[in-house]
Length: 209
Image (cartoon, rainbow, N blue to C red; front, side, top):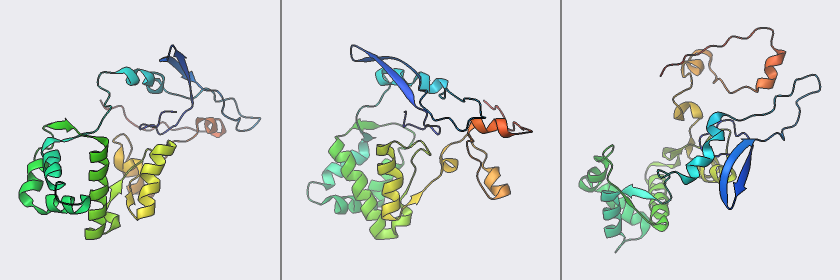
């Protein structure tokens, strides 16, 4: 499946020729819900069907990109300090912290090594936990479409350290936030096979560009 922002986690057949993905079709290996229910195969949206093209897109990011000013400050601090101490020095200096935070929305990203990116993330997490507590570390994994990597590095990791796990209501901008505010609970993506059990269906929403 596609573990990138897919809330359906639909299964796909991937066709490969000479080592290159040529196309995808919906997998039809889902179990039947019950004998009296029509078959709801196949599952999968047009976005998923075209996802393989992303593999070969010129815009696909294949290595870490970090804001240039932050990388410069990090490399300088790491010459003499351990990772956590280096991060504490960076965020503890108003001038240094402002130098890269003020650049948000302006680009300025440079290529970093995987070791540097992982070290910065780990150091920032440890420093935040030691300084303000684990609940100040906030993150999100696609729900419920969690690949094992997405789940382990997201929801599982945050749960183990005592961090705060956001829901897809906090993350996606196409969900009705008024639903939990009004009824006290979130709406969710229902299984379309259950539509056949309904006597009355209300399609409530909007198509705002």
